[in-house]
Length: 350
Length: 228
Image (cartoon, rainbow over all chains, first blue to last red; front, side):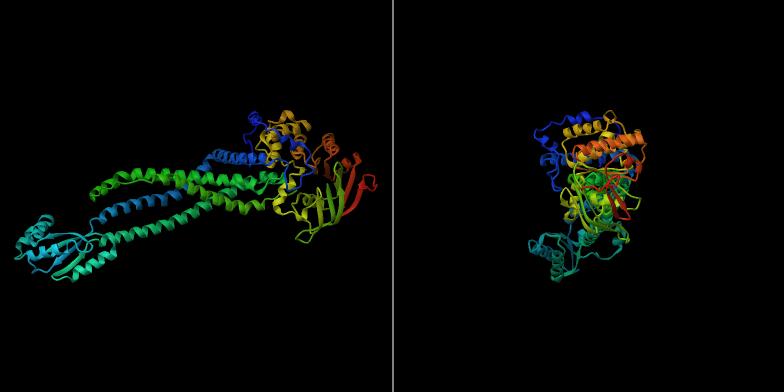
């Protein structure tokens, strides 16, 4: 609304008349008796310029109104920001989790425990044999003696093992697969398990797989959360715009009486919705970035303890602009719904 | 300019606001529309503004049948009609200038043109020096004149006034009437709905009288039938 200049009493008329006057407009001065209701009294060119101008005015007016009611605008924007920061922040954390576990996938291996009576020579022969066959990049032999030594060093149960008459640890071949695909791994596990002299094959990626399943679940949850909170943003906007429409009822009536089209009436509210959404999205980006910065120290430390090369990555540069735009579209949608529902109720009456 | 052809309007609640009303208003004529409240004055104005649609009959504005108009055409119709309200319907969140400029902005006039036309309209109603004020700072008579300036700023061929002198003293009413007469003189069809009989008595213009939705009188104030 406020087509032109909402500053009460302030004058900037001079600026308006500074717009260059195009010749040929004077034809609109004539009494427009000839014009039907289908044609207006202005040239297309003028109307296009004026239409563009009204867009600019609507945007400026929307921003001015946001600014004029700073406290309540800030609250609406914060509601939107928090609603969007939650799924956006979780998505960033999930992205990080995915990136980290991708690194862990490289360590996936199968531990092939051989029968106790397999000799070291036979063990090496088997390892040699498997190496280079389908889906196996390399193998590593851990003899019973090596296993015992390692176990002693790492477990702290060395004394207990000393007390045992025999080395209880079986010969082991560690097999590194060339793929982390669960089906391939399962097939490899079966193949090795069936081989002569093999006692047990243990797939050490089981927990990675569980983690992947968890991450996938997390993704689904975040999608659902995003959907629910996006709906919340739209509803917040519907309500905000409904109030805005209500508070400008008189203005809408006057605009309709003097021949304002629905588009003209709608436009400022749509801009208001978009501005709220965009500002909310921008604030959400800031909230997420601040939260990541705040969590960054502890998370990096945690990652280091898991001896990961990764460090916390923040939002992708593209999301910095996509989130506000997405949020702006949500605001626009909410405004559209509110306007469609409530503008029709306001008709001139006398 | 306006033609009513056996127009009836029945509201959904069953009330017959207008029954078979027919008249023609030519361009350049000032006409009073009177009747008690509830006689159908407002309904008649609403039909012209397309706030309501007739149940029967047809309304022609500028030789165009409004029955053929979709809702999309309503704004364009209204741009041809200047409307003056009893309560002025001014917006108090902006200056007098911006109030008057509103119809021009809506119609898509060029900015430079708007300044010129608004000042011409304000000059016509004698408020050129008040353009920067907020209308709330003006007297009732002045507010009414701002309303008139807004109604005529895009030079509509038709001017409707709903109780334009309702809250004004006789001297101010006369000023307002003089403005309306001026517009009629330059070819505007002016229709003034009023129940101010003293106002009607002071001028010898055509008079349409409604009673219970029927047009019971069409002629000048003395009762002489008008050749419309």
